[in-house]
Image (cartoon, rainbow over all chains, first blue to last red; front, side, top):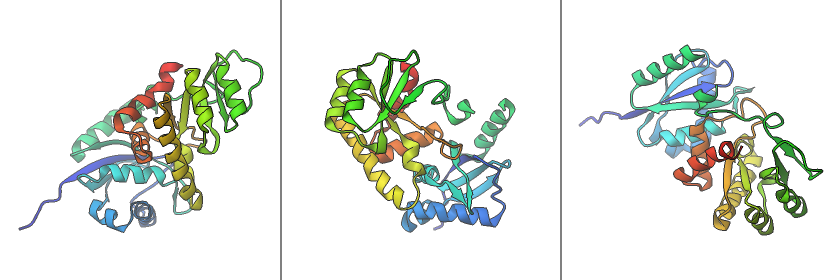
Length: 110
Length: 154
């Protein structure tokens, strides 16, 4: 029997322009999250960068029940590949579509 | 920016509120006393314009907590100091902050959660503030109340 992964999505804003399409940035974020959560929680949470919405905005998909741990871990990451960067988690949701709608709303307001 | 991060307004130290390291003459603007010295804190909390106490190095003695409580002031817990500490500093900062939160909760002193971030990287969204507070031992309901407290007082 194959179980379907149930995910929560977290909309994240970086304090500076950060492209998660760059593998160095993605690896550094992964390493930072793993360092804070520990290997066991990291693999249970299995956070993945799901979408890059704009230069500073991206979405992380995480196993349901571990989204709060990822939000906490992101609060403690202040450096990415030698650059000072902070991450703000703006919203968590069960669907990526609702986050994209929310993002469209805040982009309009900016 | 404030609404995106989940706040009505972001208050700036030095602009919206003064942060004083020592107690001088009474000022017209509302202020926060930042100190770990019992003398400074007891003098500071007696002044009408003082809103609360920001513990230096995340430490407040029992006497200081009593003085804050008696004068109806707030203890401000600066969460960015805990999150921005890196390496071995963080290993020391987190237990210190946990102890501070524990002492404040035991003494039943009113408290407010503040960021006191010095840089953009140090800032956090309201969601993160609640999670970090939860990590330090404040339950979610209290954390939400404490997050709005400083704005209510001002």
